[in-house]
Image (cartoon, rainbow, N blue to C red; front, side, top):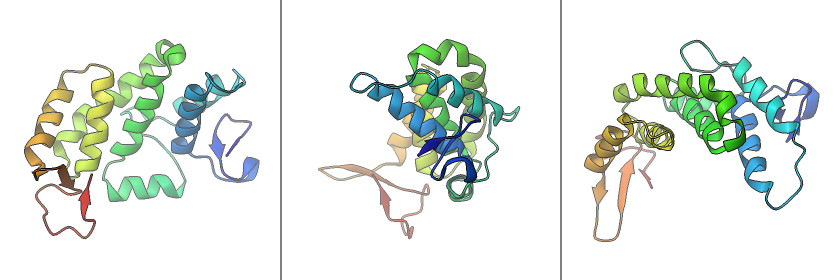
Length: 173
């Protein structure tokens, strides 16, 4: 992945479409890698500025890439993307305070949409993002996931869609 002049990351440099998801992913990865390799400090503010510029008033994001199309249609409402961006911002302790408005918009979006979801993956990643910020509503979503789990002696698992035990996607672990 390469960082473009607008701060985004994509797979093909300046000519490829910018990706909110890939930008959040690379920034998150490089933030954690800084303890082991040198990382230019300019990367993070540029990436965060790009992500903030793509956020809508309701907390969702504008993106033109295939990864967003898949996440938006497969998991409904873009919840996995919004949750992942929130996680990336929350885990980056140095820029967390500067990103409070973006994080709050993400988490408020998740809080308002997740209860309407029937996609266990979307609920799980949103619950994790909300729990990272110690939001009380995370507990309710985690309880819902526990209740909908299919349990055996050795494991708990979920089908992607709630109450769909014949899902073509198979169990999600």
